[in-house]
Image (cartoon, rainbow, N blue to C red):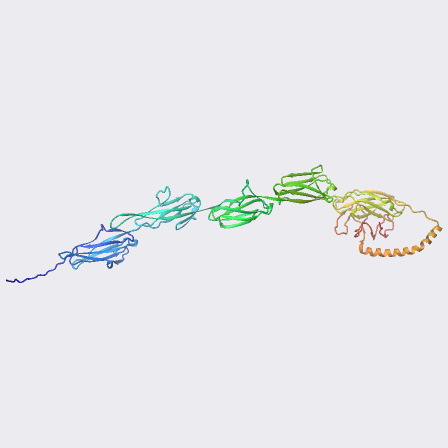
Amino acid sequence: MRFHPRTEISFSFSVSIKYVNIKNVNGNIIGIEEYTKTTLACKTSEGRPAANITWKKISKKGFITDLTKNAKYHISRLESGITIAESSIDLKPKREDNGSRIICEAINKISNVTKKEVTLHVQYPPGKPYFQFFAQNEFAIDGKLLQDKLIVKEGSHFIVICKSDGDPSPICTWAIENDPKSPNLTFTNITKKHRGSYECIAGNVIKTFPEGETTDKESTAGLVIDVLYQSKIIRFNVIGIEKTREHFEVTENETIVFICSVDSNPASSISISFKQRELGRNENTKSLVQIKKVNSCFDNGVYQCLAHNKCNDKPSLENLTLLVRCRPLLLPEFDLEPNITSAQNATVTFEFKALAHPTPEFQWFKLSGSTWKTMLTDNKSKIKTLEHYSSLSLSNITEDDYGRYRLRIQNEIGFLEQLYFLNAYGKPDPSTMFAQLREYVTEASAILQWKPGFDGGSEQMFILRYKLESEKNWTKIMIPDTGDETMHYSLIYLESDSVYHSELISVNSHGKSMPIKLTFKTKAKQQTVDSTTTWTLICVSAGSFAVSIFAVVVTFLCCKFTRQRNTRTMTISQTAEVIPENQNQTTFYLDGINTIHEYEQLDGHSLEDREYTEMQTIKAGDDSNRDYLTPTI
C-alpha cells in the first residue's frame, strides 16, 4: 500500500453588507399610536463577517439618542458561512417624539456603514375638548369662561368654539339637536331656559402599526352655561291663610308669617316693608320668611316685597294687601276736632272717621247732668253715618247745647269711645230777676238781687250802676260772678225817702249784655219823739250803751285782724278796660264806665266783708274823700 501525502489548503473570504431594511415598513414614515408598544426590526443583507447593528433616534431639534443598549441582536449563519444579522427595539413613543427619525445602521469589517431610517408619525386620540368664547353684543361683554363653565347675562349674543388636540386633528361637534356638525355653539338672545350642560365630542381616526388597521378615537367635555337673569318675585303671601279676592284677612293680635320667594340668578337681596318701614331683609337668598304680630287696625294695608340682584335695573316689586279684623280706631290721617268753641245761634259739626273691619256702628250721646242721653236726628240735631264715617251737626246753638258729647264706635271685635266738647264763645246773656229785697230796705241802704245769665263761655263780671233820680252822674261798681244761682249786693249811704235808678250789665272778654233796669226807693226817716221821752230812753239805754261800746270796740278789733288775713283792697279805676288781680286775668269790655270798683272776692265769701279804701262821690262838689265801711249782707 502506497500512501499519498495530503495537502490542506485554507482560505477565507469576506462579504460586505449591501443593505439593511426595517421590516414591515413601506416608505419612510411609520404611524404609531402614542404610548403603544411597537417593535421595529432591522435586518441586514448577507455578509461575512456578521454585521454589527446599532440604533439611534434623532429628534426634530437634532438631539441624538442611542437606542442600541436596549436592542435585541440575532445572527443567522448559512452553510457557506455567510451570516445575516437582525436587531429589534421596542418603542413607546410620546407625542413629543413625533417627527423623530429612527435609524438602523449595519457595518462589518469590509463594508461601509449601511443604514435605514424611518420618521415617526406619533398619533394620539383627541384630548379633552376646550372652549373659546366670543361675545357678540354688549350683554355678552361681561361673560366669563372658567374652564368648563360659562357665565353670561340673559340677552347675550355669543359663540362658543369647541377645540381639541390630537393627531390626526380631531373633528369637534356639539351633542345637541339639529347640530350642523360644527365646532361652533351659537346663541342669539340667550334666556334662562338655555341654562344647562352642553357636550362637545372630539374625534379622530388612528391607523395602527404594523397591521394598518384604523381605530376611531374620541374625547368629550361638558360645558355648563350659567345664565344670569334679573330677580323676579314668584310668590308673596301669608303662610296658612288663603287669599280672599285681592287680600289676606287676619284678626288683630294674631301672629302671621309672610313668605316672599323669587326666581333669580344669582341669588337676591329680599326685603319686606310696610308703610316705608322695613320689617325684614335677607341677602344672597331666594326666599325671605318674616314673622309679624298683628296688633291692631294700624297693621291694615299694603305690604311690599322688594327683590333685586346685580342684573336688575330696578327691583322686582310685589304688593300684598292685609285686611285686619280689628276694633275701631281713629283713622290716622283724619283731622279730629274734639273741642269746638262756638257762639250761640251758630251751627257746629262733630266728625269721626274710623279705621275698623268689619264696618262699625256709630251712636251719639249728650251728657245731661250726670246722665248720658242717646241722640237722634231731629230739628235740632242731624246725625249722618256713611260706612266708616259719622258726624253730628247741631244748629241754632243755645246755652243748653254747650257741654260734653260722646260717640261710641263698635263692631264685633271691640269698641271705641270719643269725647267731644262744645264750648261757648260770645258775650254774656243779660241777668234776670233783678229786684230789691223790700224787707231789707232802710233809710240809707238797700239790697239788690239778681240771677246771673249765661256767661258766654268765659268768666263774667257784673257792672252795677245807680244814681238818684234827680241826678245825672252814676256810681258804677264791678262785681265778680261768684257762681251762685242768685247774687246779692248791698248799697249803703243812700239818702232817705229817695228814688234811685239802677242798671245791671254782664260783661266778659267778648263783650257786654244789654242792661237790665230797676227803680227802688229808700224809707223815710222816722218821726222825732219829745224831749221827755228822749231823756227817758237815754236813761234807760245808758247802762246798755256802755256794754255796746265795749262790744263795738272788740268787734272792730276782730274785724281789723280778720281783714288783714282774708281781705284784699278794692280800688277805683278810671279806665274802660279793667283787669282783675286774680290769677286768671281777663280783659273785660266796659264801654262808657267812668267809675269802677275793682276788687277780688274774699276766700270763702261771696259779696260779704268788703273794704273800700276810696270812693268817688256822685255829685260834683260833695265831699270826695269820705271813707265808708263795707256793709254786711
